[in-house]
Image (tube, rainbow, N blue to C red):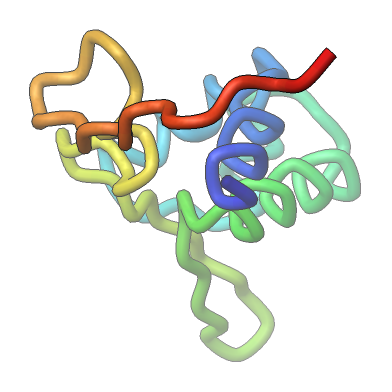
Length: 102
């Protein structure tokens, strides 16, 4: 459940969705993302941190540069596959055996 909430939070901001879509095309440096979206590097860094905490991106350092790449390749994250409308099978929920007492 926590994974789903992190992903939902990460995708709630249009700028983060745009960054994620840009990263699906390939690895980008933070300065390239900043220039592409005309946002301050500190703002991009915050967005990338939220995407990283959700498990949607990976980062690597090369000397002074920080490069980021999208972890999703046309396949939804594991927790998103459980959402209605996803192509993957949803797990069956156990039948409710008890009722709430008045």
